[in-house]
Length: 247
Image 1 (spheres, rainbow, N blue to C red):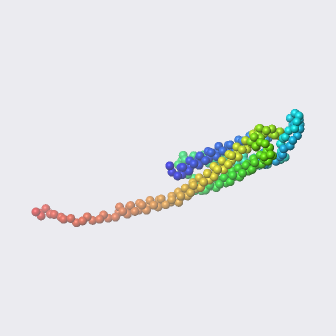
Image 2: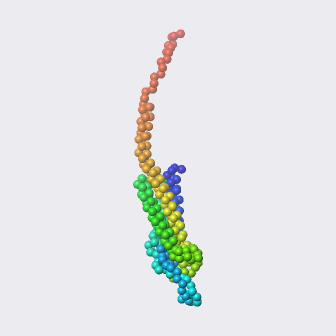
Image 3: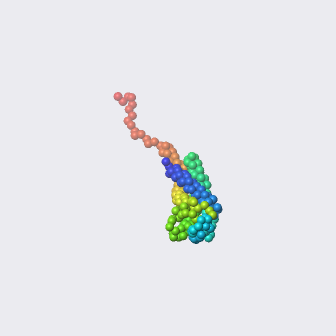
C-alpha cells in the first residue's frame, strides 16, 4: 500500500470518529437546553438559602434550595453546540472527499492540500477553545451547585437532590459532561487530522517536485540508448584466408 493511500485511510477514520464525537456534543447540549428552557447553566451564579418548606412544597419544616442569581450567557452553550454541528458537517464533507480520492486513486493538488492544512488548524483551535469554555463553565456551575464543595455531595450526586428550580435538573451534570469529554476528543482528533494533513501536503509537494523530473529522465535514458544503438560495431579481427588451390 502506497503512502498516500495509507494517509487517506487514516484521514477517513479520523473524520468518522469526529462525526461521532460531534453528535455526542450536539445531542446532549440540545437536551440540556430543552430541560433548562433555553437557559444556559454554564457560568451561572447563585447561592443556597434555607426557607420554610411550606412555601416550596406545602409541607411544614425548613428546606434548603438553590437560588440562581444570574444564568450563564447563552453564547457559552451556543458556541459548544455550533462547534459540534460544524464538526459533524465538515467531517462528513471531508470524509466523503477522502473516500472519493480513494476510489479514484488520486489525492489533492498542492493548493488543495495547503487549504486542508489551514482549515484543519483553524478547526483545531476552534474546538480547543470550545472545550476550554465548556470545562470552565461546567466547573463554575458545579461550584454554584455544591456551594464551593460545602455541600455533602458532589456535583454528579446533586442531580438526585431537589434544587427546587423551575427547570428540570435530573441530568444537569450529565448533559454538559458528555459534550465536555466529546469536545476534548474532537480536539485530539483534529490535532491528529492536522498532522495527517501536513503529511499529505508534504507528499503532494514531493510529487509536484519529482513529477517534472521524470519526463526529463526518460528523455535522457532514451537518448543514451539511441546513441548506444547507433554507434558502429567494432571490426572483427583479421583471419587467415585459404584459397582452394593451396593444397
